[in-house]
Amino acid sequence: MSKKLLVVRHAKSDWESDIKRDFDRPLNNRGEKNAPEMAQRLVKKNIIPEKIVSSPALRAITTAGIFAEAFGYSKPDILQEPKIYEASASRLQKIINELPNQYDFIALFGHNPGLTELVINLSNADIYNIPTCGMVLLDFPYDDWRMITQGSGEKLFFDFPKNI
Image (tube, rainbow, N blue to C red; front, side):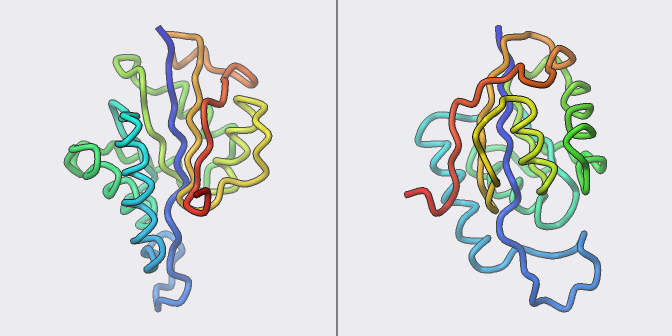
């Protein structure tokens, strides 16, 4: 058995709003449009994670909620992990290494630059930047999340809203 990780950067957020804290920034109109579209691309390919883990920052948890809905999950099913917010790639890897082994396919919703660095570190993928609402599917030849280390993953696909 292998482990699969779907890395998803939150959809486009609203920099124009009156929100003072970065953590509380909502999605903008484009983000609200892109998230369901990207989730449907996964549904059409029957790529449905068993569990969703998300940063609790508003833009990330909102994106995760839109994907959860498309997968037929309820929002309370989303595991919110506060350590994802503003996490470095090495911190994100520690979070992945602590994921519950009962799940073989998990989606992780978070933020750049940590997510892009994580994907590059884990898979040596030739990805310069994961754009907003971009998704990368990684496959690991292990049955234990703790085994996942630098260079141990294989990029199965990379998709993003402007990739038509």
